[in-house]
Amino acid sequence: MGLKIMIFPKNKLKNVSLLVAMGLALPAIVHASESDKVIKLEQQVEKLSKAVEKMKQATKVKTKGGGIEVESADGEKTFEIGGRFQLDYNRFDGAYNADHDGKTGSDLFPRRIRTYVEGQSDDWDYKLLLDFSEDKGEITLARLRYKGFENGPTVKLGKIREDISLEALTSSKHITAISRPMLANVMSPYFKYGISAYQYFKDSGLRYAIGGYKGGSFGTDGQDENGDMGLSVTGRLTWSPIHSGDETLHFGVWGSQREFGGDTLSAKFARGEVRNTNVRLVNYAAGGETFAVNDMTQFGLEFAGVYGPLSVQAEYAERDVSAVDSSNDNTYEGYYVTASYFLTGEHRVYKKRGVFNSPKPISDSGAWEIFARLSQFDATSDTQGTKAEVITLGATYYYNKKIKLMANYLISDVTGPGAEALVGEYNDGDAFTARVQYLF
Image (cartoon, rainbow, N blue to C red):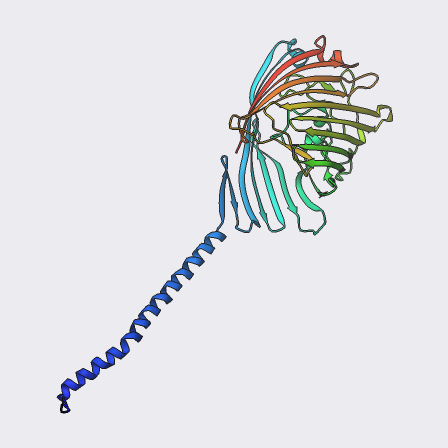
């Protein structure tokens, strides 16, 4: 066979060269195209990852009943709005309505309509609590708090609650009865302007609190005859050797020294544990006169035990009055004992502040609690004043954490040298109280 040599025209040779070049370049082009797709896919994945990370870091908004809570992803910054509504019904007779011949009286009224705003930023937090019940609009609490001391105390200032009495320190949202016992209402001024420091030691269960407050409670206007501000110093020490699960053991002691500057001590120490009655049953001046006071010392002892659904709580307190006329110096004292039981198995919740919160119902059908309380306060001297004793029986239905219904029946007895002047022949009385509470 002979060798054939093919000669292409010049223009065809150019086309063949182009085809050969394209053939050689095709794998590279395909590879480059696939590479671009991979790069684009990686870019999309990266964008998606950043979007997911942003979502993780986004502010969280929660609803709490009718309230709203906003929280940053790291939990360092929060803002919350909420409140409570308590509608009460009272029906009472005898000593409670002695000025109306002991006949039956009644009332329906909003006991508390409160709304709050609170927030946190790093080591600082704040809370503002406003009350609009019973034709009033006032600041109940205005607190600024610092929690940045490592292994040190928390400091709070503003209009804050004084550390007096376990029952007085427990929020009205969580108290067992509709009204607090006479001891708490006699001894505690509740919220006053001042500054305090406190610290809780979890391992030992010890907690201390110490604070200084502006005067202005129990009859004094908070200033002496020279216009100088009166002061109160209050401290509390609690110990909870058992504070886990459904068992709690709590002991507490508190004391308060209060300047009066020669002002007159208010006569009406406390109601007989029923709001809006015609007569306040604890009155140190009944059958006598009020008197001016230099200073006043108060102290109290606390006990509480929780054993599953059963709980017992008790307090004793004294008020020692140093009068301008020393012949009026006197000591007044009171106590209460409360026992409660959850028929549905819940238990009272102990908080590190040395107070109690309400339980969350175990089942969707809610929780039932029954209780009994014996309460007494003696505001008598040899010649004047009254001593009141109140027995309260009650039941509470917790529909859920937000809604509860309460009903109490109270039996009161009034004695002492000033009893006749205060209540006449009606030295005992009965009352029925009820409450609907909603938290938002």
